[in-house]
Length: 334
Picture 1: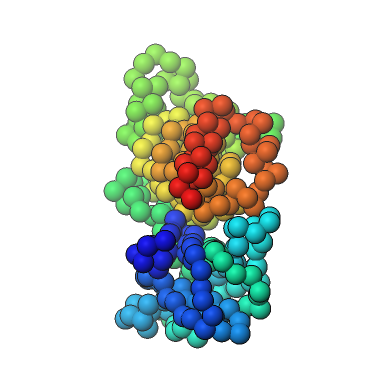
Picture 2: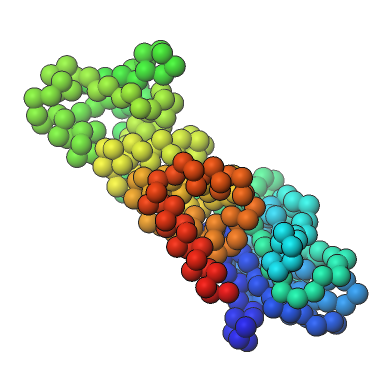
């Protein structure tokens, strides 16, 4: 490994990995800066009688004024040992990190040779201006990114109060028929698919009814809330996949982009395969790339072998080929 690579930390949206070829006794090494969330970070390792691992943010005005309050998992992986022997630290929850002594992990281990420090941030928070509460920097960061230009705040009341609605959207949810009043002009402005419905002699134009059978009522309500600017980050996070499907179906590009960015932002071992298939189905290159990097480059496929086996039996053949190509490329690069 070259000197330049020896200190480099590879990152994706919430994951960081530092690969270390070897560490001699009684030595110290600090990584290059890497960015996760709002902050630049360092990882540091020290070997004496124990192996010490440290994580801390760069000393800056941002850190002093808004120190990160972090929740994360961290582990040390020895990839060349049988079954990739892994040492796992108990999960850290809501720990404020200001300096290089706030998180120190002392490890008793006799293992030597190449190892990987694997760091996965679960959440990053800051104190609110009042100082009595915390707020996540990721809760609605992506969801609010584009909505200002796409909608007007006054539309919110038109939807919630049913002001002069001229079309009904029917949704069947758990065998229960429900409907929401909406406005042709708003829907047509936001979606070329809706505009086409209302411009031709289709049943939607004639009967003033749109039947949506592939969304739950709650997801449909969230979809309309986005269109009308009555956006709520909590419902967005719950219904992201359904909103993505609707954005694709009704050709609402800004919503599709927001959903893709948000889904790529919190990939983990529990959702990565589902999101990989969603990315393949809806032609989302950024999300697909993030999933493949997470699985292959960061070695997470070794942690979900049973899920991978099921995935290989049921996924689209073209997608399976892509995964195999990524794995082969990673092996060739070792």
